[in-house]
Length: 236
Image (cartoon, rainbow, N blue to C red; front, side, top):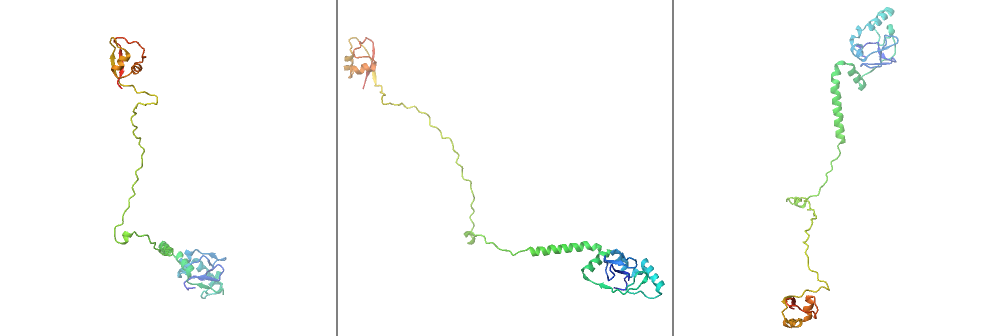
């Protein structure tokens, strides 16, 4: 323990004390020992200014009144009672460093910067560890590209869709239907009956038969002809 620190500053159990603020520190000038704020430890108890502390002055004055003059022991108890309990000073270490930084208000503005730097370092390390080996994947090369030529580009074109369209229906044509019992009308000429004509005589005149003339005119071969009657005479 440095000579500039208060000798009444000890741990709760009285076995040790640190040169930096610690929440386990107690002021043994009181009975029972009372706790001390880390800020007060850094500002008063762990500096040479502890000689101006009212508790320190009262305790040392009581000691001098009880046992007479003389210097204070390294470990003084309440009302100046000297103790032989060994004092262990813990120096350095992460705990001591953090305790000193927290107790010293002058270092508080630098705490955000330290935290940011620590965060950036952690992110950088995590990014470095997260990087894996890069594996190259070979892609097939077109023969034209391998020889330095231009790579043909194939454009996909939409196939024309077949749209069914209504085919024009042929115009209805009427053709004469000749059945097996149909009879073609024979070609004919007309003849007007004169006086003295007979059916057989007319047939001989036009090189046909009286039966053909009768059938064409819807009469019989025995039908009596009349003067001026028009007959159809077949020509074939």
